[in-house]
Image (tube, rainbow, N blue to C red; front, side, top):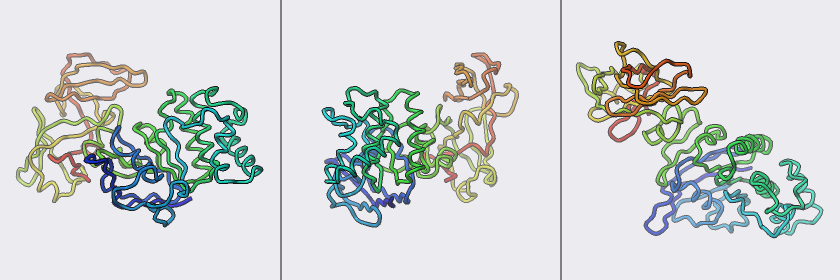
Length: 364
């Protein structure tokens, strides 16, 4: 086990900035998730740590040792790929044993290590099979066994569950969490799936365009997103954003949108008074669907018109048009509402967010 430190890590492919000035500290034994859309640089960071790519600049340290120029085979990291990367002509046993045999470990020690990893992942009955004779879930377990058997300092996992169906993904996710709990090996896990990130990560680093947008524990990142990108990337449906403006009158700041005005109280909103005093111009009000509720048209709240109803069993998602914005409201499945109805959207200002013209959360 080891601490991993990235200092101003940067990787350019020609004029393309794949990773730009990323600084991270991953404590010994932590499970960190790099979350973001395709092409944001998260997989490139794994490849830089593994030594499959050379950094343009910056430093990578594992257990206090600078490894930028260290041979990939000597970095003592194990990478699990999206496509499993199993050798098709080798049995499961040979695939798992391969890194140990390459390191010239004694045959008896190899057999013992393979058996131990196979038992841990419940693949003992598969050791004589070829990869083509395995299901996707079984192949993923073999890939994990091959990583575990090396007893690495760090696990690097690049979207290892993306090729599995929903049910198997859930099962394997739970297995990975249990595995990390037992082994305690520092793990950096890459995914674009927010459910995986929220349920597995002790901390999440949300990435966009090669840069980290926000880092923190899952609840923190979800509840107080640093900017509109994080707000809309996390959540299903994502946070609602309604465009309006901030105005300052008689020492009070107001968020205004057509037909509605909200007095922004520093004590309630969590926004520092000096920030509110200087805020003005274009802004967006952000509220998550579960923090909104429907009220009659004569109530206080955002005015809107119901456009669509989406029953999904445990919830009813109601789409409401508010000043030209489609707003999603999560309601109980037995809610009585009809399309075309005038409604008001009511919410607790303490659970809302104001994003400035630069898309940053004024609360941050």
